[in-house]
Image (cartoon, rainbow, N blue to C red; front, side, top):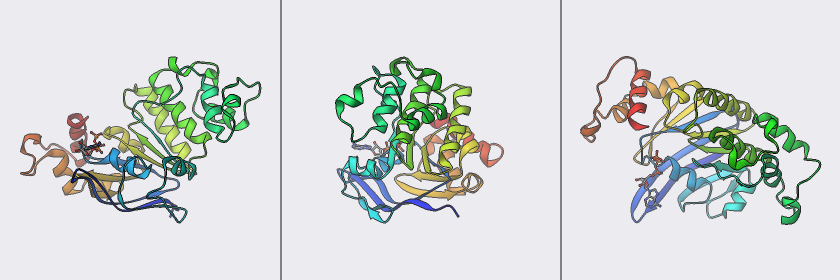
Length: 269
Ligand SMILES: Nc1ncnc2c1ncn2[C@@H]1O[C@H](COP(=O)(O)OP(=O)(O)OP(=O)(O)O)[C@@H](O)[C@H]1O
């Protein structure tokens, strides 16, 4: 079995008494692309916020035996936990190479970080190849295509030595080719890391998930392989809205379970 890099136990996040995350357990393993799915408002992003120190929580997040609850955001990042946001947060006025050089250069002085260097570190050069941006080393990040910005942001986590990557809807707004490339990139980087992907796109999830956790109303509804969660009656009910609790979301049930989730995706996305 792949080794566990991050363990979350009984995570709860409350906003003014409303439990956005309600007792979630989660393990992220090296070698896996772990999808976090669930309807809007299920608590996916809030869970990522908790893990990365942006949201206060009760429960426990551990990495390498260290409890991370209550630790500051930079400390959590230094522990190798990195995240991307739906809107890429790159330095738009700096080049691809400079963005990566800065991300790789924690500990260097601000001036040396901003200086255009003749020789980029090997790690930056290798990462540019890996994320498919080697031909854009001198391009300002601000004029990259949407997908390329997402790849650059992932690259910035890689050069920062993150080994647990939490990616929030990385393919939103991408075309077919960019999605395919992103799927390959996720598996490439997961070979020696743990990758978690918050996603609404069920086709992308089915094509790329090693493991899936389905959240609903802040809690884990189901977890397992794509097949296991696709055939789970509770998951189908939530996605199809066949329960009395969500009559307005009722959608006709057609075909195989995986098709059902596709229907849900069209509605949820
Ligand atoms: N800062 C906040 N203050 C109050 N409520 C919040 C806050 N952040 C999130 N929530 C609420 O917590 C719940 C979970 O939100 P969250 O964004 O984590 O869901 P999600 O599963 O990521 O949804 P989506 O797929 O739409 O992004 C929602 O009901 C949301 O309105």
